[in-house]
Length: 362
Ligand SMILES: Nc1ncnc2c1ncn2[C@@H]1O[C@H](COP(=O)(O)OP(=O)(O)OP(=O)(O)O)[C@@H](O)[C@H]1O
Ligand SMILES: *[C@@H]1O[C@H](CO)[C@@H](O)[C@H](O)[C@H]1NC(C)=O
Ligand SMILES: *[C@@H]1O[C@H](CO)[C@@H](O)[C@H](O)[C@H]1NC(C)=O
Ligand SMILES: [Mg+2]
Image (tube, rainbow, N blue to C red):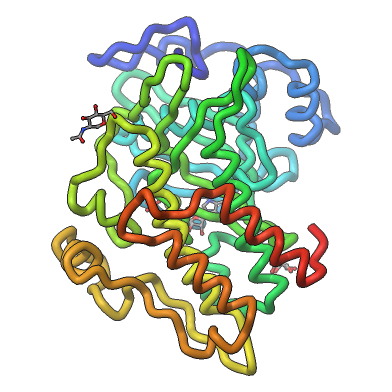
């Protein structure tokens, strides 16, 4: 079902939803914050998935002022915008990326998706008429930017490291977990995990973003629901079975184990930035020393599948108990054989123990 304009049937020839663009706005009383609106709609249980009512989404989208562009990706641009003084992030999709927009909107509005460690969805909308359409996705804005941006300009202590790692795996674990029942949640695999698709919140915890490639799985129907878009993940973070085109797409668990490989690489990026015994490494992308910028499939396949190389574990990590355990953890995530990789729940439990032993309160 179409998440925003449910009464329209999707057609492949021509998107039908421009018909309704002149629909009225709804009145949102002054003083209401986005948080109030979302919490109210959650407690009122207003039906359709877990988002705000569609007309409220549209109204918010219309009232946003675009302030400045903060990023540009393969599917479009990200802007910082304002709604009645509150900052929001606005992802504007290229018209050609309609499938990505549709998918991401649908996933965010899946029942029980809201979680502290998944980017907070506010609204989605389409503007324009006829052949000219603009697709918007409005979410929480995080001024500290992506984990990639954050690691470039910040070094970490053990506490900061564990907070970033634990919150990221908590988000991934929620995504991966199926919740059973009529009011349940399907299991979801991300398929494009990387440090640029994780955001850092003000409090030092992370949330997972960029769900345009996600796949869902429902154990009732045993169906793997793969998005129809052509966009594939990011080559640098692709596991060997994806590079080798050996991943069995009819088995959902394959996508889950592919995510865990990418998570292992992210863990490596984070751990490098932790100061230990006065030593810290500069931020680098995984395989920075083995493949060129913007590597090809062949470049990646050569290193990851044929030579079976992995990012190097620094010698000095072994002299710090926390970093040593982290090195072990990431190796168990990026194992060549998908069946040998740790699950998100296992990693989460291990990191929870490490937090506890460091006496860090969540
Ligand atoms: N909600 C947000 N709050 C703050 N900054 C954001 C938000 N979403 C994205 N950004 C910033 O915008 C940048 C661009 O994100 P985007 O997802 O468009 O591109 P990318 O992840 O770098 O590339 P791609 O997803 O195309 O591979 C991010 O790296 C981040 O710095
Ligand atoms: C995020 O940025 C703000 C403003 O620069 C800063 O006050 C805050 O400490 C940062 N948060 C983290 C986790 O570094
Ligand atoms: C993929 O998995 C399905 C379901 O487990 C199985 O029937 C099929 O044979 C597998 N395909 C390959 C190529 O391994
Ligand atoms: Mg991205």
